[in-house]
Length: 289
Ligand SMILES: Nc1ncnc2c1ncn2[C@@H]1O[C@H](COP(=O)(O)OP(=O)(O)OP(=O)(O)O)[C@@H](O)[C@H]1O
Ligand SMILES: [Mg+2]
Image (cartoon, rainbow, N blue to C red; front, top):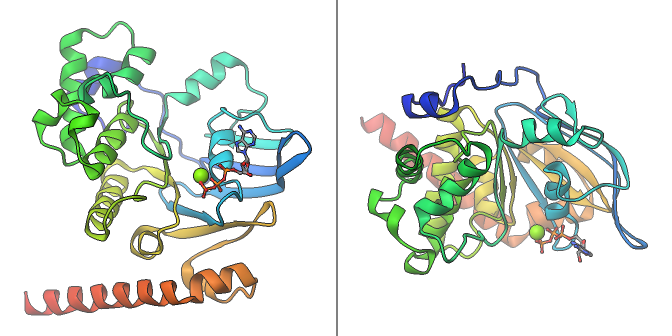
C-alpha cells in the first residue's frame, strides 16, 4: 500500500502499482546528452536513494535541467542507461514508460502553470490524462485536497495563476506535481524568485511532504539555504559529469575548484551561519520547552 493514500484517491485510482522497494529509484550510468556537436553530458553516473532529497547543483548551463528532462523521458540521450523504479526507460516500450510516468511529479523551472486554467483545473490536467474515467466531482475533490496539502487556502483552487503571488504559484505548481500521488518528485529551481522567507517556507513544505508522503526528491537549485536546510545529499554537475555526490560536510572535503568556490565562498559562509543560528535557536527552544 502507498503511504500517501487517501480514501478519495483509493476510490479514484483503484489498485495502485506496488510502491518501489529498491534502494535506488533512479540509476544513471554512462549518460551522454548532445545537441548537435555539443555534448552537455559525457559518461555521467548518478544514483538517487529512496527517501532522500537529493540537491542537484552546478553552474548555469551545466545541464541540470537537461539531466532532469532525460530522466523523465523528454530528452532522448545519445548513450547510456537510465533506470527509474528498476526499469530501463531508455529502452522501454511506450506502454511501459506510461506505467512509470504516472509515478512521478514534476515542477518545471519557471512553474509553467496553464494561464487560462484555474489552479484546480491545472491540478486536474495530469489526473484527466491518466484517469480519463474520473467524474468531475471526484476531480474537483482531489484537486481541492492537493491545493490544501501545499498550504494554499481552499479558495485558491478557483483562482487563475495571474491572481496569485509568486510563492502561491510555486505551491500551485507543487499541487499539480503531486496530483498523481507520486513516489518521485522533480523540482527544478523551486525557490528561484522567492524572497528568503518565502523560500524558507517552501523548503519546509518540501521537507514535510517528503517525510509524510514517503517521497524521493530530485531537487535542482542554486539556493544554498535550501541545500543546507533540507537536502540529505548534494550532487554537483561540472565538466559534463556528476563530479561529486555526498553530504555537504563530505563535499567540503573535495578540492575541486568549483566545489570549493561554491561551498566555501562568501555566500556559502552566510548560508552556513544562518543554518547554525537556526539550529542553535531550535536547541534553545527545545531546552526551554
Ligand atoms: N533544446 C535544446 N536545444 C539546444 N541546446 C539546448 C537545449 N536545451 C538545453 N540546451 C543547452 O544545454 C546546456 C544545458 O542546459 P540546461 O538548461 O540543462 O542548463 P542548466 O544547468 O539547467 O542551467 P540553469 O542553471 O541556467 O537553469 C546549455 O548549454 C543549453 O543551451
Ligand atoms: Mg535549468
